[in-house]
Length: 274
Length: 342
Image (cartoon, rainbow over all chains, first blue to last red; front, side):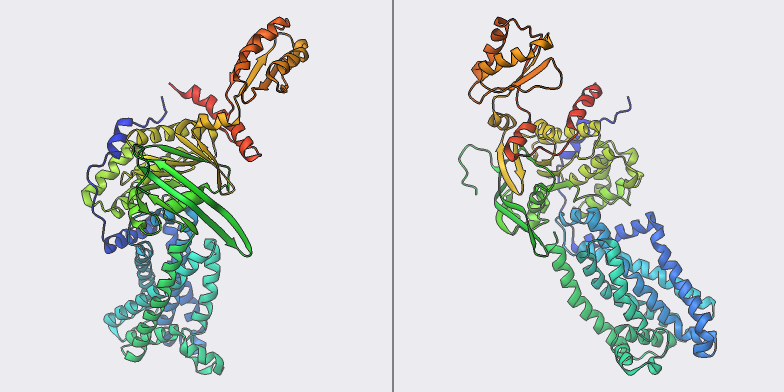
């Protein structure tokens, strides 16, 4: 007989649990959710496609298309462009945080998490920690390609690592905006669409691709207050060995502010979702 | 709440005046509009109602996923609004809104939950192995859940809600969309859990399911509990049932109709089968049923088949709400179920 029999005995045994474990800590639960995010990368490797491909396309395209015109030579331009492309790549990848969160909600996985007796922010914090792995992969990809085509950071390995670390901090803070969108909007695709509208001005109206000196004054004003510009300047400084504390501190402060503002909003929405 | 009448079992779930309204734009939907529940420990309560009646909203409020707009609810004595974590530690939840991650394997899903509940290392893997075995999923454990059949999927959902052996289990439409055999498996699982002392709140659109599993049934419609009682109480509330006759000679049907009308005092209905005839037994007319056959005999009408049926829960629903239940497959299911049973 092919029917699956549910054994009453083993079911009884499984239900009769003698000892209940102690409630796990906030850190342990967050790490469990981070582990889940990594498992998802393992099972759905396609989600790394964007992470791996977009930096390649952007770097090659901008370097060889505009490099000569903008900086005199592709080699000169890549020194300027690569930190910016790195920032743009990672910032675009942060959108997936909201997208995955929204997918979890629409699929009902999130309500299972919300019904558990755990530290409430753990599912989101864990997901953000898992995303950091994704950002790191994308960073390695981007910098590796840059080194291949002539990027020679004067700041050395340490400068590059410090730059990436600063970027990860910023990306973690920025992600809270997308968790809000993930909780507010109805479908994963809507999250994607709206997030891109947020990101376009943030990334293009910045100093990622060109020096803002030639821009109209209104735009320049925006570029100068855009935290992404400060991030790019700071990372250029770190990787180029000419780091100025001013921009680094500005980036860290803006990361703290973003987290302080958007994380509580996220948690409020998370608690009161229906 | 604890000053309930002495002798009655303590309540596992107690709700008073639960209200939840949803607003979208200017439109306010009264999803739940004042629901009271009192579910004794160790019993199965079936919340029966059509789609959109408010069943899921009630469950989500009891499971702390939704904050009630008004009213209070306690699960095992813990207030769902003020002591949510204690409620979460005590209940298991399965339903369309609380599911497992399809991208992960069955084992990974359970392992994640086991860790989130505080099992560590070996204890976690052991717990997962036990659950997989109990739900006949050991072989499927290493496969992604999205490859599972409907029945396996529901079993992993159930296993996921049993990681901590909750004393109270909320099952939100646990068998919707399942084939009859998988549905029977789910029913068997629920019976074992209840035997073991768990309290179950089950929502369903299927009358048969409520009939089969629930000690008490609440009928919910438009956010209101419109009736509550045991299955037989509900059936009785509609009337004493109906007599169904099959005549030897179709030509005698008109005559039989007259006799039955005279004896029972209700108007018989005529099914498409020209030999058949059925009539409702009036509310206080149970004693009249015995007179139907002799009266037909006197009139010279041969009746090879006679049966007395209790009203179905379908009729209960129709009587209570004035509208028929949405179509359900339970009648087909029952036939297949008999074939399947060993």
